[in-house]
Length: 289
Image (cartoon, rainbow, N blue to C red; front, side, top):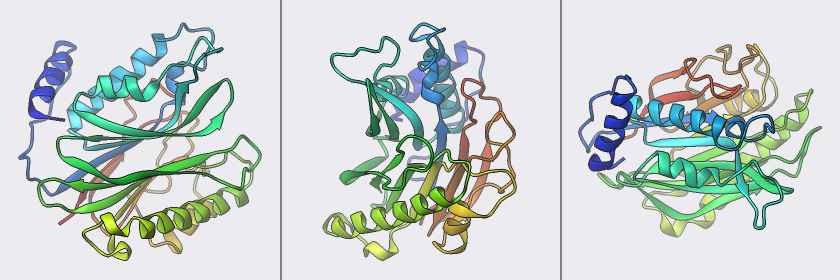
């Protein structure tokens, strides 16, 4: 966030009695990211009026962002209402996130279109990073046993030193078997790699050297290295930011992951204090020099 906007947000959070981390020097080499399946900000639940659960989730996002001074968020299960909107509950969650995180920009990609659009989003600090080239969104051709899922990626350039990296936010099938998820993970990496090649003219580094951050809900199960996670770590060269048995869902499962390629991991973890979704946010600090 910009310095002025961060002060405003810090004041709001301090009023709520939360602790704010010190603002670091603007030229830091760290990149601080988080991934969070918001469970549609609670707006999927007809028992709660629109805005009630969403407000709690947005408050959690703003609090974590202020405490950790995050640069990039990856969100799964995000709504965007269609016009006219026949469903009274969901609204434009990307717009509401940008309002809750002043100074941010973001992209949304809808992987499912019914009476409303649902999908994934990436939000970043526009004071520190510029978007390079267009966002790259895809729906997976392998659907698994549930509705279609997808992902979105964006190349970002750090203003302080013009370092570029790719952020890929993905949501894989909630299938009872690993096969569809592994196929989707392979498809995601292949599609985003091809997108980067096509956007090579925007880059200051060879496309093959571009660092990646990949995060999202992989719907993997407890204590497993099979399927999507196994492919990403054992074949695609990604390094996890958290252990493969860390609880990321209220059920005790490790469904969500945050991985990188071409960076140095400084810290990774899970915010179990966030209870406004059935998932917990994952965070990581990477060094990119």
